[in-house]
Length: 325
Image (cartoon, rainbow, N blue to C red):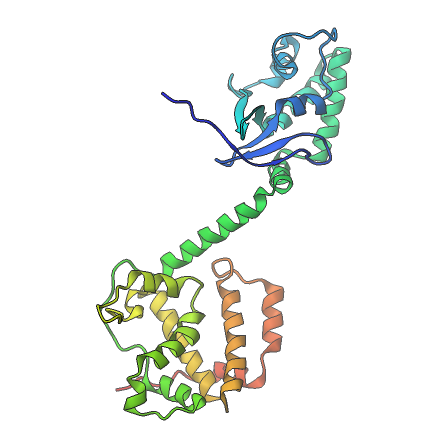
């Protein structure tokens, strides 16, 4: 059976002001260099003679420290980690093991008489734990190595996938009329287009307006996902309406509310420029609502609300347009 090679993805030579090489592996494990840990702890052998094994490993095995270092921990709690930075082999420990060791040394200092060398290490442990706590060491390594930015991107991607799951269905629903003619009538007025059958049947013009002002005001990624899951005919037309793949409880309801809001904005606008200004503010508000799966940032939300002009506020009091009969 082939041994899995654990590879370094991010790294830094310093951590919290100490020369302490730290790494984030491809699987997300945070690792501290054994040599770096020994130097940070000012570890040398009691008689200053070179011996086999790591200095840290020998301190972990000292009988006087065993009750404090292991306590109720499993025997393999301090097992080392071998990883590779390119071709370079690195011996290390999972990052929080350093904090565990420091805690153990400080506890030992409170209960037994330490040797001179052990006392120096305990003093250094106190310095280290004051610089970072067990909870904070992960964040410190992520910041030092740059991994925090990828983690944030991953979290954002996970949020996006959750939202898409709420809005996009796996199976298309039965067609129903969603867009009222009054919606297009208002937009045609602003664009200076005659509201005639000849213009209405031009899918390109209507499609651009619908994609930008309606589907564009749904959460990011929804329109792309709908297009991805909707096949086209040989002539290049959509085989069904995009809204047929929206979930009935969330996706379609939000679509209907968006259509009503955009139509209202259009109806209270005197020209295209005024409509686009109002729509931009509406879009900004909706983006805030979608941030963090609907969790609003209070300061941003207040700033947007204060910027709304009288006409945009008026839409809250205007009932949705009646559906075509």
